[in-house]
Image (cartoon, rainbow, N blue to C red; front, side, top):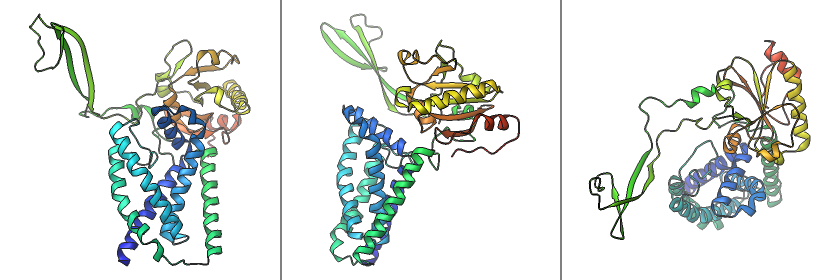
Length: 376
């Protein structure tokens, strides 16, 4: 039984710690996932809780795994892990049946699982969680209770600092397709022979007041007594989708500058703010001043946002404002505002509002006096 319990501790401990860490690396990405679920279930009024819940969840997961595998407050960790599995296993079954959001987000963007894969994972994990919970009273503490509490709270504080630093400075590991060093055009290519989307198409026809559904193989093509009503297509199998499939940036006049950005020779600095109204005004002002400074020095500068025209009309500062899909902007960078430097179609650097260099740095980089690209 000792070997079984040890195996259960390793499985639960490592899985929960990994899940918590990858979420803490990208807390804003986890917040976006909460946002998606809230809107899928018409709970949009919980939006403001998305980020706090994201940080809370990853912290609880990490501490549960940490406690189970290290033995520090192991009973507490065992109970936490069991309660999480008890909650998420039936929930993921419901999500698998309804599929409101295609990717569960349980391992952030590090490992993407479908809802059915997530449910299967939870079915496997709940077994060792139950075993550990049933044996929890037999657990003997490694240290005195007071010392264990100090160690546990220290782990919580270190983990929270790690999570918040990733929120402010950008993720320590970038799991997104718009990573530093990536040539954007290469990420948009569909390989030859890649699987395409498969759809099931049906046709609705009516005859003498009765409607009937047909398929491509049996619809009444040559029978004029049937009247065509409508056609329905349902996606039954998702084909290959390139990592970057929705990158399109256009000016407010409707001019598409996507190709210019991914194949142009000049340096281009993008100031990305998914919604101008959601960004701190001080950070926006600093970004606009940076834009004016780099433009004078010969570096293209674009403010890329998903804000509506009414909001954009309030910003008349001589800078080039462009539009893009909000989801695309969220995927490009986890900051509002955030900055991406593009050189010859390649992402040369990424920064949050807290770490973006000054205009002189970009001038030195452009001149070849490379000061080293920092994404932190």
